[in-house]
Length: 323
Length: 291
Image 1: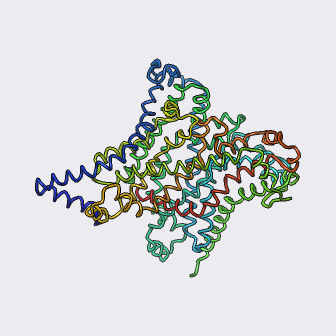
Image 2: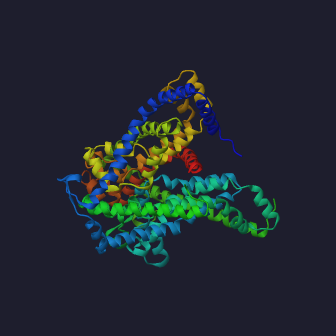
Image 3: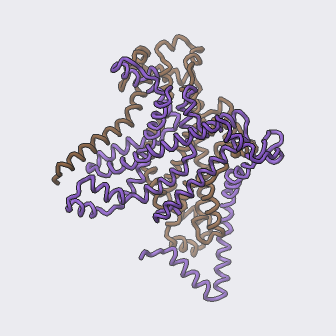
């Protein structure tokens, strides 16, 4: 059994408090006294969460209204579900929802295994200097903003970029990578992997260190090769972490980050690259259709919320839930 | 140690693939650096790959003289410094009480805060709140909505929770008030987590792009990210700069200028990278342990 010092202290204190009425009163005044300064420092935090987190949630009522600047959030006309009806009948917004799902599901399915593989591979390296060097290199892109990564990608894959120069030398033809839907999606996914796979591997690497090395020794004595060891020891060992990361990834299925799409997109591939976040920006903020896009935002938030709850419920059935 | 044949193949593959992964992360940067340092002829003929040809610093010179990059660099620094300071203060003010078990309402408040991670009002309502506070075109619109990152706050809280209770008790018996306790005992013991979270915030503010784009209108207030994005996007970077001095630009290409702009954003990151790597890894693992 694990000792929990905080719990022991709490129990002891409760016992003391219960023992006599006076002690209880003393404990309560004591608690009240420490609470005053704590609450004083907590007040700005409450204000922050109310103003910037909960007030916008209340502001979601405009999804059911026809918001105009002059009438304000509360004065605008109620329209019921009109905005949602419009969203789910317009072919444009349907296409945007479809694009969002497509890109994010592809990201989850294709990008998700990379950090795991990277972590397992790094974990198998025996030479520390090599491990350190590779880690240093693969973590680096995580710190760049999407503007930098987008700039890199556009420079590399442009018509006059290095990739096309090499391609032309090899095959005599160049290819407009950023202007074909399939190759754009590939670049979109690839740039996401390039930026974050290394850094996401950290979590798995941490989980890998908790696997008991004697398991590998035993397996090795029993004649299990590297592949068998990875399949039967390593992967089950980090399975809980994989499940948690999957739950978190599910929560993001409805959101394709604005920055990544915005820096990579162009009008020619807008049929595939226009997603919810860029649409809300263009139509909502720039086009002034606040109610319609707030409805889309609410839909996005709700689906993400339900997905997280669902994935967690499924994970819980396997005893690996997040809460 | 002896390897079986299968193991040897495995290790060879492993080292080759990892080398490849590392190189893939480095090559684009090298290429861009070479572009930014190469002369016009070399860039246009496509000869620049991983090493600068006809080395020239014209691109950088022009970038700093002909574009407002210095001003936006200053803006980025200002946004980052003030933002980190504000966020750190308020995040400590959130994490410390929540880490104290005698704090009234601790459970309910934690729940209410975690809920904001799962469900958000979204962009439009947030924008309406920020603009109704009169923060548009004001750096307050970048700092205030980002005062507390709930994720960072959780990491800090779990660190505070692990500070031995005895230390806190001892200080209290010596007559320390809560503020003294926080400033003299808890914070000095928490320097590693403070450094980690500080860097998390610094990278966030330094890279901030979307918020600057939607909240800041005046060109002279834009930060480096937005300026670079505009340059990368623009077909006419050179024309915009050209107007001042045609003599100078003979050895310059738009690609070179864009590459130089991106390099200006990357270089501060590279300078800080040892710190970033050390503390970020720590922060990510800290967060992972406590969920």
